[in-house]
Length: 65
Image 1 (cartoon, rainbow, N blue to C red):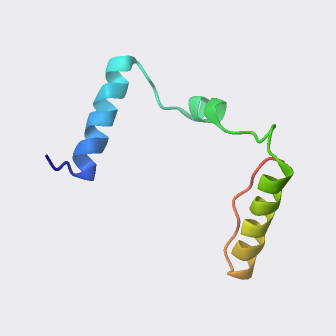
Image 2: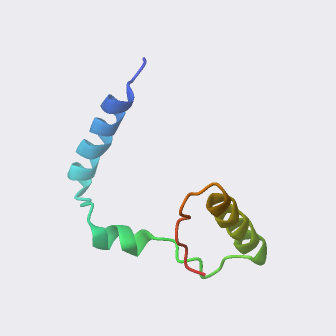
């Protein structure tokens, strides 16, 4: 059975309502990865991504260190 993306998203929204999950800025922030256990390797990779973004004229996303 093929399901379109819109059908899939609709099912997800309905399931969230059933489970009582409410999307809010506070909930999103509480689930955000703060990077507190981020490895040096991951930090270096994120720095490279930011550098490449700037070189391409794109404002990089801000990440907590």
